[in-house]
Amino acid sequence: MSYEMGSIRCWSCQPSGGRWQMVRRHPTGSRRWRCRGLVVEVVSIETFIWTDHALLRLSQRRLESVDAEEAIRANHDERRPNDGQADWLVRAMTQLGVRIEAIYDHPVRNDGATIRIVSAWRVES
Image (cartoon, rainbow, N blue to C red; front, top):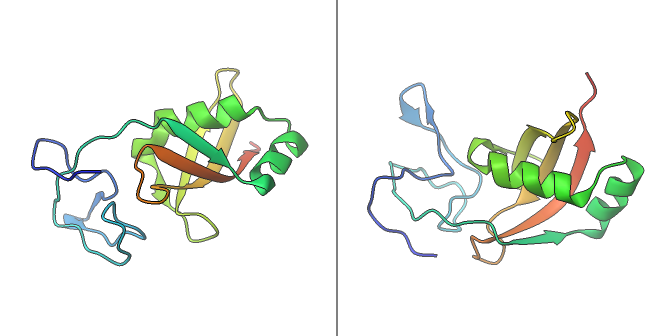
């Protein structure tokens, strides 16, 4: 993945109270790195890797893999750092109106086009 100056701010960092917040894993791969407005190339998500745990949970929770993949792809820019077994958490609604959450790692082996899904579940109202 290349990092270039341009018009797009770092997709892992969000301004917090006028200051850049610490991120769990910055696109450079280093942890505990403070973003200072680094501008990076936007990478499209092309590959999803599913853990055995995530596949088991899909069937138990009556979810389709395509729903989780679409939710991650559509809401990747709004993801939040996750403190558990994965780097990121995303919340979304499927095309059938089911609210879901998914946790995932990104990038995977320094490949910004690959996501490793750790788990996904329905959000009860």
